[in-house]
Image 1 (spheres, rainbow over the protein chains, first blue to last red):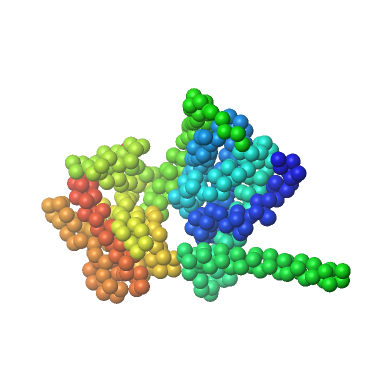
Image 2: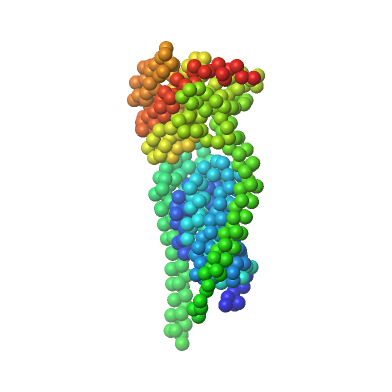
Length: 215
Length: 222
């Protein structure tokens, strides 16, 4: 039923048009909690991307084998499996990172982006578009986390990716790395995107009004 | 969509299939990463111990039980036991003991690792294992030089019967430290400073009476 949508569109969907954070406003728990630094944001984003891509691929491949009566249970088991995989992988890569991300890795299971994508997309599409869509969504999520985490790290610690930006006299804006900072920065980005969208709409309306007046 | 009857065997078979695939994936990854995870844990522990005991080259974990000390296995410390780490220098000589103390801070448990010098019976270093204290306030315990100077020679000598500390470690208001067993708090971060003092006190009160009578077991090693 999605034959009109090209693979490229599937990919771009999550990255921009349907960005999970800024457009769909999904997965707010990790968005607010782990974005204290750019590195944490990217790691969390990539972990989620991996789970999303792997589970959407498997769900899409098994979509004819899973009766709809037991689909939610099956999706959750599949998602939980890949979260466990990521959990072990991160422990094997770096314990510092594991400590920094803490319970939020396990909480990927409950991230609504995952079940949302599985139910709304992967279960209805063949593996290739499902995977591409998942990659786009995952990267869109990562980008969103990075946008928030980068701003919080710059203001809250005077650093980006751990590199000091402002020299020794910088006074950190501590609230930015505390929980309220997550809300402030997310709100700031949402206002910015809403503003751009409203501006665009106003231009389209003005053009149409002009055309209407000419006709 | 037409509703049609689906037999329970179909449903169970589908769930069994999904569970089977997932089980294989999980077990495979667990087996595959086990060595790397254990190696990482060991490195992380050694790094923490070496930070508080700079001369150390090798670490051996022990459990302190009420009736003595035994080398620790791979598992977590058994109930009632206290895990501690004996650190040795390149020549195999005991350079010190590291143990963990924890107490409730402002936001969450503040877990610290302290270094103990069995000859002088003092605490000689402090490191933080984990904490969620307010950045810029509570986390000063990591960098505040005045505070860290408390742990250059913090007195934790035992009474002569080796049953308890001669003087309990106590956190006092900034600038009022008068005795070697007192911890001078950081102004504005009193809650976290107190958590550190309390964590060390609790841990040392239990660990040292079990450890000190058997210390020769550690020094005569190798």
